[in-house]
Structures are given as structure tokens and as C-alpha cells.
Image 1 (cartoon, rainbow, N blue to C red):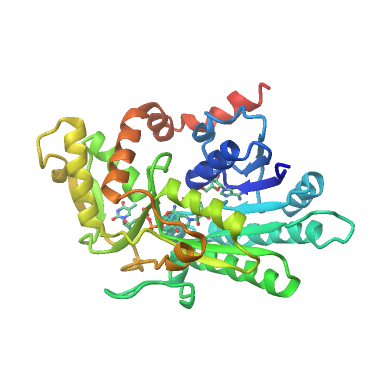
Image 2: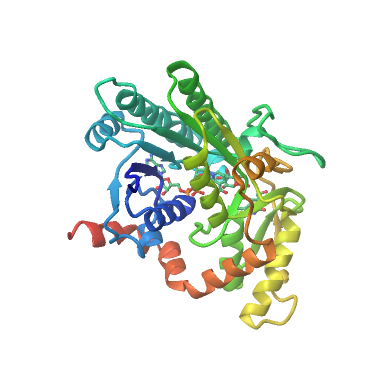
Length: 356
Ligand code: NAD
Ligand code: DAU
């Protein structure tokens, strides 16, 4: 018999969440997939236009920081799985307004844990094999010098308000696993890139600026290193961990794909020159070195050996291939990009959902 599950995906209207929702809706027709999202500036239901009418999909507009609402929702829907992506996710914004990160990323996570605990640990409810899966980041491990990798054994050492808020949330997830025996999973992923990423993060920002012949802001001299992973490969890893991971497991997810920001931007400029039919070197002239991010972590690098060995996951795309695919997507989805940059995407919910 096909397994039927009721899975809550939080933050499903965001960048990574929309890829996870799409994958689960298409791959598991017998599941019911509930996408809970507040639709902050980062939430965009246009990301899910292609699957929004699927019979196994339901969108719920709501805020994870509202405990009463979250408790009611869990009582009513009796979810047997939670994949928790909803968060304030941009490091630069966390430096300007940390409190939004504390409230959403920490309090919001605790509200979900309490609601899951309320229904899953109640002997009168019959929920089999429940799972609470926290989507975390490699940034909780701090910053590396030139050598070494973050492994699952690396100690936490968060250094920005964003990473400190994610680390706090992870600790609470682990504490609920330890104290109440709530079945929890945690993964730490490196920098994602690909379609539907909000153009305030480095890669989509640079693509959009090159397209419009505007300056590409590179912090300091662009010496900082990030490990990049195509977003669909992350979604596939999430699927594997959710289904095959055991309670208490945690995995690192990364691409073994380190790039200095400046080298990445040069590669992107070369791809954009070709795609836009511009003379070689034209886009690179837009590179503008700007004031560094305060407390800017030098290097992140993930050792993803454990998930490879235990669950058989590995990235499917080479970086050049993934970057070219991403550029193609942004250049052929100019309407999406224009709705995001003009703010028109924020009316999509009222237009599509309120008239139903
Ligand atoms: P995003 O900013 O694109 O999306 C976040 C989503 O959460 C948005 O749809 C937003 O509306 C929603 N949200 C925010 N506050 C909410 C609230 N109070 N209630 C309900 N919904 C709310 O983020 P992303 O880049 O897709 O990241 C998703 C998750 O993955 C985050 O938890 C992030 O920490 C983690 N992560 C991201 C990356 C990356 O490279 N982007 C890497 C590793 C881990
Ligand atoms: O490592 C995982 C993390 O990756 C996630 O947890 C975060 O949610 C996600 O936003 C991302 O964080 P970063 O800070 O690494 O991503 P961002 O795209 O903001 O920056 C990537 C690098 O590029 C970083 O070294 C800062 C630099 N940068 C960024 C911007 C926006 C620039 O040089 N110029 C820019 O304009």
C-alpha cells in the first residue's frame, strides 16, 4: 500500500522551500503537502505557480511566531512530519535588524517543537513514525582559515546574528530530541544557488545587475570563500534524510565546491557575456569593490562524506553547469525577476487565493 503522510513544510514559498515543496508534491502523490508561510518579503507564491493546483498540495498563510495559531493548526491537521525551513535567512539583514531573526528563527522554531510535542507525545493520538526535520546551515560552525572542513563533529561557533539565531534553534531542536525523545533530524547545508533565489543574495543579485549593466558589489576584495550547491541537489538530500534518517541524526550537506567570491563573479561575468552576446570582459567592468560586511566569515567548507557514505547522496551538477543553468533560468524568467524587483509578487496571494 502507498504510504500516506501529512507533511508540513514551513517557508515553502521561499527559495529552497519552493524546491522542496515542488519535489515532494510531484514525487509523493499519496502524501498531503502543507506549505506554511508568512509571505515575508522573501516569500513568493509565484515560485510555486506550476504546482499550486495539485490535489495533494495546500498553502496556508501563517506565522510560526504565533504559538496559538501553530497549536491549533497541528491539532487540526495532525501532521506526521515537519520539514522546517521558514526563517529570516539573509546575513546582511541580520546585522541591521537582529530582533527579527531572534523572534522568527528561535521563537518560531520553539513554537513548532511545542506543537509537534503536543500531538506526537500524546498517547491518545495515533501518529506513526513522526519526524521533525530542522534545516540548518553551515554558518553555525563559524569560519575556517585556509585549511580544513566542517564535519558533523565540529563545535558550534556562530558569529553573525543570523548564524547565532540558527544555532540557538538547532540547540533547541536537539534539546527536545534529548529531553522529550521527540524524533528530530538536523542538516547543515552550504550556500545554495539556482532558480527562484531572491536577488539580494550574491549570485542572483550579480545576474540581475549584469543584465541591467549596474555595478556588481563585491565586499572587500572578494577573498571570502563559500562552498556552492545547486538548490535541487539540496532538495534531493532533504528528501533522502527525511525518509532514511533516524531520530537524532544530523548530516552536513555541501558540494566540495569552494570558490572565492571574486573568482565566482569572474566566472559568472564570462557566462553572462556569452549569453547576452556582449564583448568578452564587458560584464567584469561592472565589478565594484565595496565596504566589507561587518564580521564577514572568511571561509566555509563542508565535508559531506557522511551523507554520501550512509545515504548515497552526492551533488549531480558541476558548478559551471549549474551556474549556466541558473543564468539561463534568470534570463528566460524575466517576468518573475521583474515582479520581484518591482514588488508586484507581493500581490500574487491576494489575486490567486482570496478570490477562490
Ligand atoms: P528564504 O529567505 O528564501 O525563504 C524563507 C521563507 O520563510 C520565506 O518564504 C518567508 O516568507 C518564510 N518566513 C519567514 N518568516 C516566517 C514566519 N515568521 N512564519 C512563516 N514563514 C516565514 O530562505 P532560503 O534561502 O530558502 O532558506 C531556507 C532555509 O534554509 C532557512 O532556514 C535557511 O537558514 C536555510 N539555509 C539556507 C541556505 C542558503 O544558501 N540559502 C543554506 C543553508 C541553509
Ligand atoms: O552558508 C549558508 C548560508 O549561505 C545560508 O545559511 C544563508 O541563509 C545564505 O544567505 C547564505 O549566506 P551568505 O552570507 O554566504 O550568502 P550571500 O549570498 O549573502 O553572500 C555570499 C558571499 O558573497 C559572502 O561572502 C558575502 C558576499 N557578498 C554578498 C553580497 C549580497 C558580496 O560580496 N556582495 C554582495 O552584494
